[in-house]
Image (cartoon, rainbow, N blue to C red; front, side):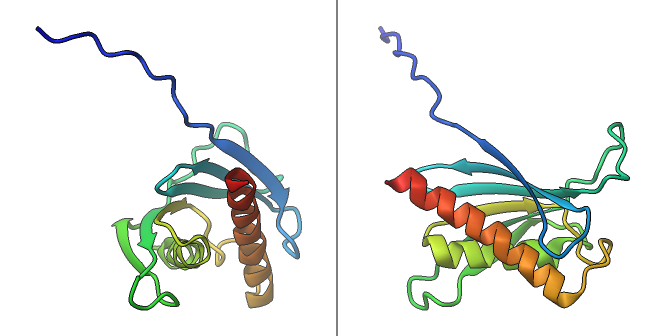
Length: 143
């Protein structure tokens, strides 16, 4: 006869982080971050003051990326779900995080730099800030 399993409390402690995107006026970046032992899950979105509370935003793309053991500078990635406006940005974030954290990452993002009318410098500064926030939280969790 099978014995009853002892319940295990959940270990997931998702973090919700928001900050204004640098050089992108009135745009706030939102990060939903879940740090696990074997992977990191990141969901990204933006909001502007003109967004109404009742509107539904698209989910965007979902990308899985992992470090390549043979070539650490070029992570591998695969698209789990593709939304044309956000797949390139999401893939870029996922590969950067996989390379910097050295573990697999799942990144979901509805951020479309084109629709935000961001210049290349503004887009790169926002991406840099998002990556730095995630990496810093990862390092803090490992201490």
